[in-house]
Length: 327
Ligand code: ASP
Image (tube, rainbow, N blue to C red; front, side):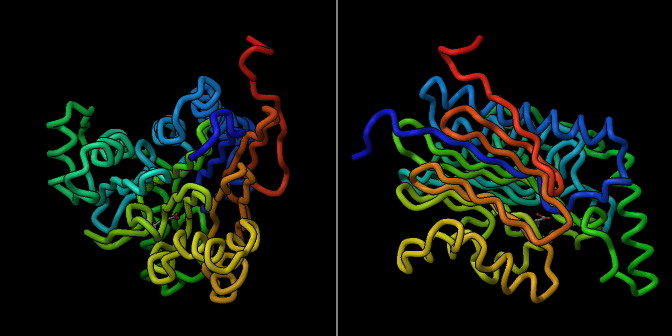
């Protein structure tokens, strides 16, 4: 059905819970952008070798899960018990196959467990202990829970508890609250894929599951339409079936990717004061990355290898190595 050598494209986000500029040093901002660039490079290398969109989004998310700067895997947010409960999902736009884990406590890279579930086909979503046991049985690296904990997340939990006691939760900064990572890709066969991974929001109730592992809410991919990964207060994304809503607007309402992706984020969510963002890609490789917060870690590569990473408004361009033209 799809021609070989469709243009390839890749986009990712590192969450819309970005700190104010003064809260990190220039070196730290640079290091966070370097990690975004490394995630793009990992995914792009796969697409350049005519690898699959699924492999590309997985590779990009693994790099961000391993980075201290993003709320997923290492450096994930802490819940109300000062514990980590990790959510992740991945979806194949070609077959609508999907895999997800939620409230996992020990899987070093939750996206890898989600991918194995996608391939296995027995269950789409595994929870908590079941997810951890599955990952272990499949030979994935499992770690002690404190592997995920960083001083910044402990500080964020302390601040959120203070806000709770003082009744000032509404004034908590986005960075104290949440974050997520995600990637979307179009491969050379014209297939789309999406992946999302998160620690959820800081001080979330024990057992709370957000939108990221819910197919159609935080993650969705359908060939010929779009692939989407969201970030922001998951409850709203679930209630609006956010990622599938974008696909439906395009498929049934003939909206462009940009119109569909902006609709909830710059409309209803913004009007309700809900910090939100997303990355989305269409069947031609066009990218949209709307956000209504101060910033969103994001990046993308166009078919010609021109690439961008950003945290706030300024975008930093660079040339991604294109196979055959550079080493
Ligand atoms: N969507 C994530 C959740 O609700 C959090 C975020 O992206 O900020 O779990």
